[in-house]
Image (cartoon, rainbow, N blue to C red):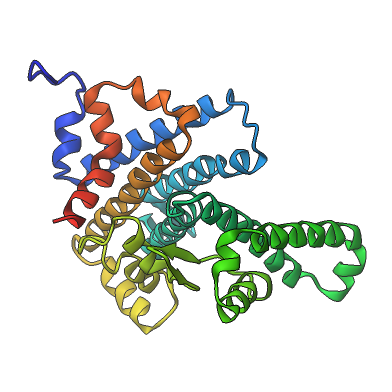
Length: 308
């Protein structure tokens, strides 16, 4: 844009996002960019198995986005006499917003927030071990007997993760109380929302507060997670919201809010993913300047506001 020309025909509309159609077009554009990254990832030979597994996050976010996009179109239903047209369940839209936000937070906790090698080792192994611990909790007694080999293999992995964590200088630097608390969090509760920040250890960070550690503490995102949860959870509040959703322009307003939140999450996620996975950053580098701006629009905008 050095010559002040705009080459990308969608750029001005994406920048302004004045209408529901504009927001949908921006969502579609981001979905297409995610797909480009997914295709490029097929040709990356990750030497580290954990990084290969974490790269699947792009596909997971892509499928959420496609599901979200399809829901925006609504659906019809008829019994042959009575017909409902273009219904949209906004509670499901915000359920996807919530799960996408949680995926973003998980990625940040494991891949972005850790600043030292020890922190990285602890968080990677906490992430793996906590997941396997939770899966073992789901087994019934009969299922445990039928899957004893798998259970034993996973238990070995959990023990390996524990040893890697315990052998770090970071773990050894914790007080005995903190060590027990960390072990309980990961290996008993099956949680990994742990943060080491500025020399301090936080044993449990709620999803709504992860943004405080990743430069997204702006008021614009304050309460996003709680708002999405309130929209999605079955409660009297959800009944009131459902009753009002089909009056006037309320549904379009809900869609606009959901799209803004979802695209904001997508922008932050893919931007930080490309920073953490330099093997694939060429997909971004090959974009024109306007397209780069559209990828980064929310990520940079929110973080700039957070520093003011």
